[in-house]
Image (tube, rainbow, N blue to C red; front, side, top):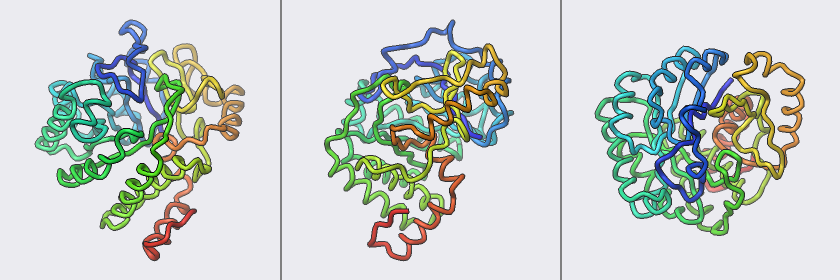
Length: 324
């Protein structure tokens, strides 16, 4: 099982594609680290926000989750460099992804903060100097920034770090309902080139990243998602108030329901309840058709033969685009 732990909705940046910063939680209402003792064993956990490094007790959160999860990755805007480096020194086995929306000009405009690209890059470089192994960038593609996708990918390659990708979505988590893609041709062209470069890579992991990015292309075109959604079955999202959701892509205009609250129930009571069964059934019928890493990654692992077949087809016939 995988999880995302949303530690806070406080944030110091004002991203155009995410309005979480407009609806911050207070420190008093955010869950205490001890609540996480209730979580089950996990294969993977993403610690996210808001900006998780605004929490003064983040190291305590990480310490508990390290006992629960085989692998942890913290998503951050990378601006609070000193705090990030301090935590990295305490927890060297934790992954860190710094969100950048392109190179300096585009990133700083989209993130609403001058100098945020330079600070994020500095953070990754310092982590690299510390010999942290699981580090990289994360980029959300929108109408504004597809032209920077390959540049950021090549920057990541040059530094020897990872690049995680996404496309703008609407959800309760982002507090958005008006994210829309109109610049589809340029977006698809850049993703197509990224997929080709990933498939040409000598790293097997990059081949599976190519499949994920192909899934983003399918999403941009409005096609059905490549794999069944595992929301509420193989993955869950815990918010700052202790609510357990099946995923972070829900919208009120479609449906938005919590499986339960970890303050009032054990995780087992939540996970094995009739309510959870009903919500899983809704997830199976969900009309959203989204493709985000939090649910796409466990779906790929559950159905590993499908991305593997796609990889084989595209490695053998690289000039043809195969649909699984």
